[in-house]
Image: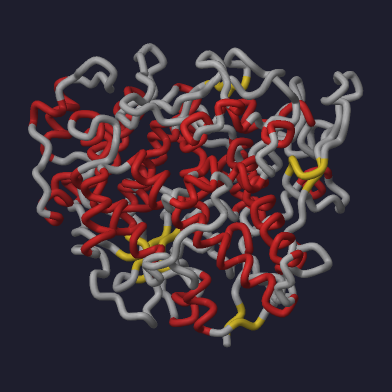
Length: 560
């Protein structure tokens, strides 16, 4: 048995080193160079999240130098460039942040929070494997003496939070509303401690959309647990019965609703019908999944290009007033839950300790309930939010990330370039000597991009001829995958990116404790609409309808 080390709370959503199977620990050197390999031990290795490498390492000559990375990052976040919305079909903006919620589920180190808990080698490996099992919601479960704090006294339901009413609010926003904020620690001498989300993964409170999606999953679990209790399910098996059903419905939704919106359906169908070809194709039942760094550092960062700069958030913050900086501000991890002029770089600033009631999400604006037949839950086209197309452009607010979004508050000042999300992505890939797009195309037997595919085009990044020449020969994998989606995928991942994402998700579902891949005859049974249930349909809107009892007053408590 080994003791798992606790990462500092403010750093839990940052990864400064990667344990790559067969290579050891690759640590950030704190410079512009490649990762260094500190001495490691078996125990140290077990304490690390298990990554793997799908492709070859890039040579130093194939990597972009700092000046070139900065030039590319600035071009990708150029505020003067038009950025098309997703089209054919339009992707509701909620899927941008559902994707981030899923990412945190895949990458959570469920044992990192354990300070003095004895855990087995099996638990260490399982807790550090990228299974699609909602450990970001459940942690290690109510029986774990440290993680039981996430649960109500019955050890079955998850805790919920209550919003903070506004003194000068209207008849709704002046009220505290239970169940619409994350649960928060609520104790401590510092306001930042009291604001901290009481959930297994603090990253789910670094952006308000993700935080509100997490609250919806809490509701989903709690309602199912209550329904099972009312049906007479024994308390001895009630929690695990609820968890299994929640996880399988979640996996079904990811496979049949989320993934087809971001990945070429032909690739998905091939992988989920015939199995994997390149990533752990013959894994045994006792083997835990790893995560390819090509997925984590490149392919699944597709969501960064889907982010909008502003949203029609609810009736109070309509007409684009739900800006991206505000969606960071009204969190407990990146922000301070308090309105301007309080300074978000100071974690002790502001007076709010819970989400203000006027910032509760209107889920009707984030997911399309009309597509599932609920016209009564539709909003106007002007109110509805559509994701940006997956391409090589990012909205400009991502060029200036808030310090709290990557644990930078209270740290020494950093170079302005490092606030740019595109620059951070490109630099992390360099640190790991990540394979280039051209290398991965050859590795996966995918037709490579043509030199002409790097030409400037409307709706895409505008680059110099000198930069194009570099990318044609040695293109960073993340940019390459976005370019594939832009020129060949109609705004969905295809080629290299589609293959990596499809195979990693298949393995993550297969490797989960509860798995629709290993239980191929399972079908969802919580779809509210009987006709859709008969067809085996269960989408994100079905999940929300069940969680919020199909009521507009819960899906949008602030009203039209």
